Image (cartoon, rainbow, N blue to C red):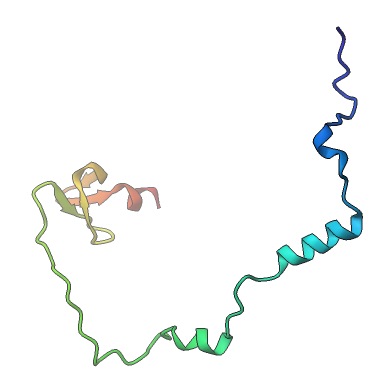
Length: 100
């Protein structure tokens, strides 16, 4: 049995075609934002650069460098030994800094 794959296919499920006006209405309904947010209220929650943070306290537990970590001589970040790209004398360079 030969089948024409270029011919349009009709299913019984597609028999209730919607009008173009109804489809446009659905599109406009779905494009409306779900939450109306007050811009001024949202802006109050953001901290601007240079804001006075002198009254804030941080509680961070700092761990010493582990035996399987190194400090990159270029970016000064502590990284795992698997990130070593090369060693220049006593300086260890990470893969990210070597790629840049």
